[in-house]
Length: 513
Image (cartoon, rainbow, N blue to C red; front, side, top):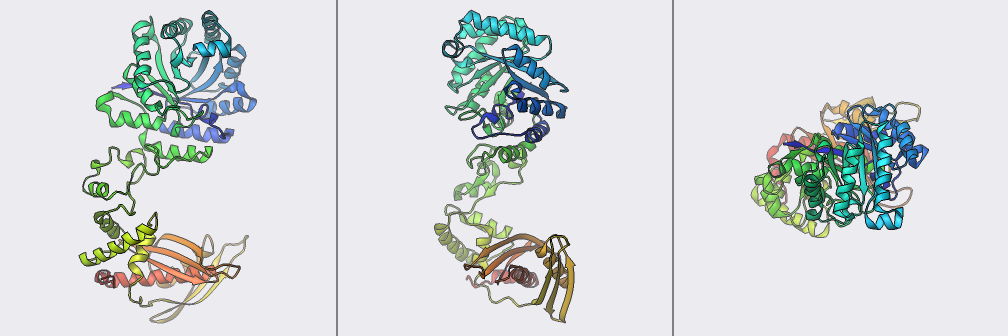
């Protein structure tokens, strides 16, 4: 398969998203993760834009060792000089020059004729060639440029010394067939085209950025430019993760591949979202929260029988742990039963039927049904749990200059036992002390607090979920002192867990039936 190079412009075009402003430290952090992801080229910024951007590009250039670092430049000597300064120290520097070529840009922005555009661009490329071995040239708004003139511009760039010619659909105007035809024509008509790489840079104004990029690949593009999560000016750019996973999933069709470490995709997406403040939509392809989530009963049943019935990509491929079967009003009995097993409940058929009916009733009233909701649904009608352990006294020592400590007295079958322990915080210390008394090895799966009344003396309810091997149980504690409520919730969960462990069949005899 032929190699498709990945040119990432998250730090340049992505940062041009309204409201996004990355500082130097953040740019370096993202660049290092892009390096782990395996992108071939990182466009770090526009050095001539400001002293701050120049410094940020330089910081990225010095930090990156395994990818080419690129600086953007207009076709002006002062811009090229700024990029030279910014890219000092780079292992593999590259200059990205651009000049608009479309009729509307020539007339209204540049106020130049075709000959002036060609002359200006050629002069800039030849000047840059004195200092850079690698030069990418972009005829801005290439999608709306006359095709014969675009061929002329490309031929000029090759003669002047460009190593990559990028074809930008700057305003997201192209359709896949039109955009693909540009590459096909350039490949067939331009003399010397084999000496360079052709690149595609697409915007998503009409929602076709990824489709256009793939059309370019099918018609000879060697490189795809884009951003993580598809961020960028206006509606954004080609989403790199979408192109990479399309090529990986449909290798039979495209016969092309990238060098990306696909398992780093999810991590990279989260980092970019966090540092830019741009939330990834839940329905975003590949990296959205719902990309591997299934609620429909029909889909869930198919997934449980064979994942490929409804998933063409494994979540593990992009670095996620597993798919999610989201329980809601559309979920079926099969998924509900699997969730019960996952939570440690083994019910007889009649008990499952009753529990499922109660679940459906709850799902009609509540949009998202959590694991905790299901636990509460199943355990709310259990007979009183025998108290193997009972909290007698609690003493907590805390200071912001000292290590928190807790002493608990707990009544057991042998009498009252007391232990003291330290922890990372007061709750951690309390739980360590309880563990020391009981000797139970448990995992705290969940801990949450909510107020059940109002005011300074509000009652606080603590909810915990403890797990031991394949059995889990929830506990609740109520008190005006949240630390006491925390201790009571933990002990309540311990008692429930012990009861389940002692009598496994008891999970089948819930008063749900």
